[in-house]
Length: 84
Image (cartoon, rainbow, N blue to C red; front, side):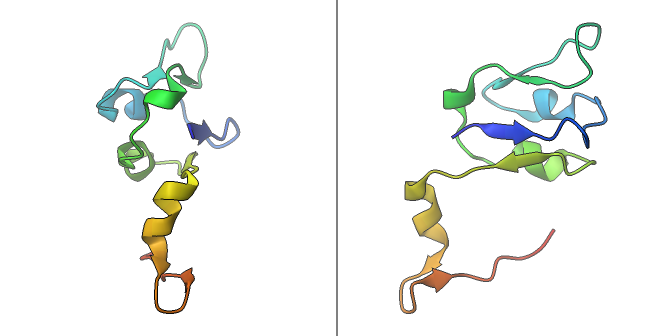
């Protein structure tokens, strides 16, 4: 599932496009303030864009197969992940 950018929060800095190793984002400052998710299915869910976004405007929606990594198998409840 592709990353989602909150247009209200986005500062238009373009850092997400700079840090993405797979060039998922396309950013043209003169065209639009908010980067475009140009290649949504190329995303590896590495979380680089989310971690480097100063405005916290990017959300990664993990596919079910990735979400299973964050479940405690003993209780089948979501693990407590560190808050950034």
